[in-house]
Amino acid sequence: MCGIVGYIGGEQAAPFLLTGLQKLEYRGYDSAGVAVYNGTGIHVVKSKGRLSVLDGILQGGEKLPGVVGIGHTRWATHGAPSDVNSHPQVSDGGKFAVVHNGIIENYLELKNHLLRRGIEFVSDTDTEVVAQLLEYYYRGDVLEAISRVTARVEGSYALGIICADCPEKVFAVRKDSPLIVGLGQGENFIASDIPAILSKTRDICRLHDKEIAVLEKDGVQFFNSDMELVEKPVERVQWDVAAAEKGGYEHFMMKEICEQPEALRKTISPRIREGKIVLDDMKLTKEQIEKINKVFIVACGTSYHVGVVAKYAFEKLLKVPMEVDVASEFRYREPILDENTLVIIISQSGETADTLAALREAKKRGARVLSIVNVVGSTIANESDDVLYTWAGPEIAVASTKAYSTQLAVIYLIVLYMAQELGHSPQAEMEAYLEDLQRLPDLAAACLADKKTIQYFASKYFNARDMYFIGRNVDYAASLEASLKLKEISYIHSEAYTGGELKHGPISLLEDGTLVIAICTYGRLFDKMMSNVREVKARGAVVLGITTRDKEESLSQQTDYQFCIPKITDFMLPSLSIIPLQLFAYYVASMKGCDIDKPRNLAKSVTVE
Image (tube, rainbow, N blue to C red; front, side):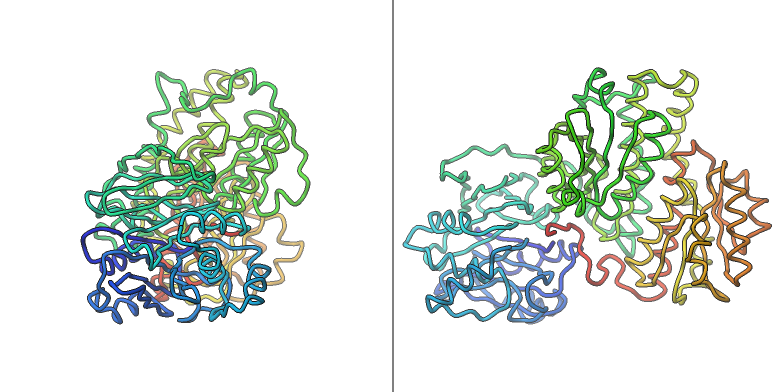
């Protein structure tokens, strides 16, 4: 969940480490630190708080000379945020410094084993156990020590390691937590994500589970868990450096909201050819589609909300039962799967820990797995039977926006592709669906054109204590994501309910002035939603209504404020209705002075369960 960066080369390491960590601040953290070999030993400097604190201590890196080092931004799991619990963690004898993403699940057992042998610990972290174990097993061969440690530890880890006895090398190993190696000229790098090293190189190798990388100034070697040399393919990063920069926007989140029309275009356009959906990466045949008797969508957070929308689309067009599961619960409820079950895994990073565990559970039970991810070569992509990439480009802000939009677009492509293969829908109906799908990027741009209306509304209610979102059918699905966006970045308590559920309890929460946002785009249930709006208005609520343009007049008679979106196929409506609500969350958080791109307690890539 945190940031790792490492360097070996001919330049000073500390300035690069600090710069690389700055590019990873979006991942969420509460402390930061670096370790550099300074010619006589490993020198560690770390501090609680923002990276700017560490940068000030090191004066931009000038106070820590050396050409080999590792750095880290920590998000606390074991032990409170503090200087001593920050990474890097150092072994008792000072030979090893370690940075770590993930969780060592059996750390307490290992720690007690080492304590009984007289090894002293200074932190509360599970990471210090790794550093101490490395020195405990070290007999002059660092690779052997790493191999023995990885055989003992249980859980997830991405590790960057330096050893005082081997100052000409940086070591890296991973399991269930992402780590890449960057290849340069006379210098090489490790990082937990591409933006950290993009200013130096576009050539990367992705470590797979239990693989070890040994970096030297002029080359890199890779070993498998049997300590055999392996060849790794080199991937060329295609997206522009500017894609990981703000490009004139105050925040990444606003930039990414505004990038949605183009992201949708890149996701959709190449996959529609001559009036047909063509999914080149999909190996699922027509015969296999015909045998599918049930579909599961398994995901977390925003991606889970994509799944809620997908349920309506799948059951409407394919007449196949679908369940949507929170990934962290899926494998603990004994799901009933077989070879005719399709499990769709959705993850922006392709490394989400609980989603990856759910994928492995599904495969163990015989299901076919199709994944929707953004990161090429990620673990979830590699372990799936089929993978469809969103091609959204980098998403830096913690609160996901264009990932949600492009994941929804891929869902529409999958549903329509299967309907096309099965011939379930009349030709005219399929043509109408495809036309709307191709219009989606332009319609999204139209929703963004009216930002000032939402900004004005946010200025009136940014001090609200509670907010409630209501909707029915796909509008309820959209309300879940809208509520999440608001609470993630503004810290305002919000909840989402189906309109019909109000009388079963939630309406008791309403009082004079309570803000209710009613999503009323689903035409078949518009009149019922108007009844729900009247219910909340009767209890003193202030209501913002969102509907399609053909219902604007009817909505204005019932609500205090209105925002209208273009009309589109029912199951695609959440792709448009979410845009004003993303903007609303952004403007509310901005007016409250919140740290929008790095909200408290959250991380971009959740690589621990």
